Amino acid sequence: MIDPRKAVINERLKEISSIIAVSSGKGGVGKSLIASTLALTLAKKGYRVGLFDLDFTSPSTHLILGVENATPIEEKGIIPPRVHGLKYMSIIYYSGEYAAPLRGEDISNALIELLAITRWGKLDCLVIDMPPGISDATLDLLRLIKRIKFLIVTTPSRLAYETVRKLLNLLKDLNVPVLGIIENMKMQDSDFIRKRVAETGTAYLGEVPFDERLEESIGDINKLLETKFGRKIAKIIERNSQLLVSK
Amino acid sequence: MHEWALAEAVISTASQLAEKEGISEITEVKIKVGELQQVELDIFEYALSQLKTEKFKNTKFIIETVQAELKCRVCGHQWLFRKDELKEEVQEAIHFIPEIAHTYIKCPKCRSPDFKIAAGRGVWLESIKGRKGE
Image (cartoon, each protein chain N blue to C red):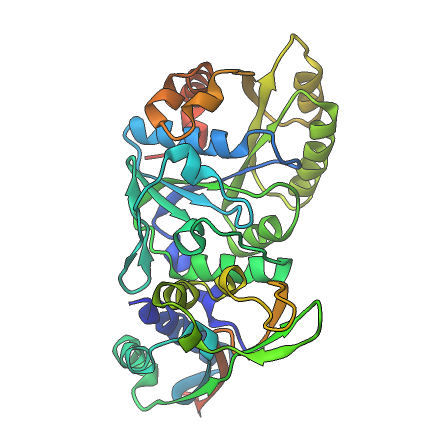
């Protein structure tokens, strides 16, 4: 017996120029905020952007974006609704406010299902907010989307970086492109992460200061883009826009 | 309709399989459809008929429905999925992503959401038959 869904995944993604997985070895480093801000900033610059929340068991981008009453359209598959100019897809359309307690096998199946039925159309960039770690979602994307690129988030913590180092090694062994590393929640001067990243030959895209006002912007994208965090991410994107997306 | 995306996946996979096996005309495609996904069979069959290419002009599509069996990983209880016991919006959510069953369904014996979808999840291509050569 063959699972027919895999055969159409690349067909569904063929009109997307750049597919970026925002990933990290650890949780709580700011992946969802960076993925959301990256997507919003690129959309504001006139790019056609999609945001796909793949953190099925703990989705949060809908809270960051303040998503209300959005529903995908069913038309020979599903078409993600537009949220603040983004084509936005998340499991929350189906799980609502309830928990989705999924084991690895179920995560894989749900991920394949959504990749097989979601019709993104033409996009300059699809940003994927990944769950933490090197587990089912990461392995499935590596298996199913051949042209995926990774943007990796760490904090200044050695604990976070240790898991990032392992993720980097894995991606390097598999010849998967890594666009670079963002050091988030920087609280004091230190070049520890910058130096470690340089040793791996990966691009250090920049540091983002810890922003104590960031929490107040959750659910309000205009506030988010105006925070210290939002402005710093915009600067990093400005410097690396060629790397991140092509029109 | 969501059934179109699934039908497209079946046609695409059957075509690839035929190419791999040197089959130029596909005479039969056997498909299993799990009850958990609640595929509307008439829409699915219509989509297959509309999406088929030259290779499929004389193809008989045989669709078998498979009962959805759920097995609790905690207490081992096994039971059948019954869509009528669920609200319409829940049925629809499971239709799009069958794994969403874990959000809304619990083991009737021990109330755990940690169960295995033992059978009847979604759409599978079972086999194809056809004529080889030009």
